[in-house]
Amino acid sequence: MPKEDGSEEAFAEVIKSIAGRLRNCYVIDLYTYAPPYDEAFKKKYFCGHMNAMGYLLTAHYVMTYIDWIIRHNADDFAFVQFIGSGYKLFDGRGS
Image (cartoon, rainbow, N blue to C red):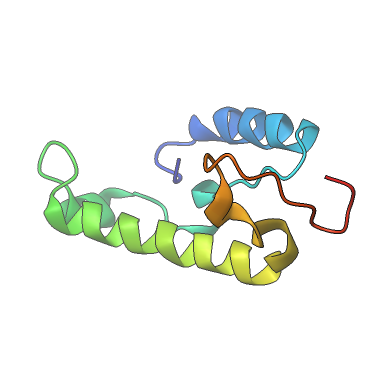
């Protein structure tokens, strides 16, 4: 969750700690890397709840972050196209 009123920090830390215990688990850390959803942000991108522009902007944050993660961890994503296909592939790392 992006920063909003400060209460999100504990949530962000729990998510990071869970991911830290799992193999090949990545966190899209909007708390650290997205701009805060402060009053100025809400004035433009909320209307009681996030509006269409807010959802689109947030989607771009997530897409950009996922792209960065994959590009910097390419080996971990080499065979994702086969997930759920029933194919068991050897990736050279014993899996």
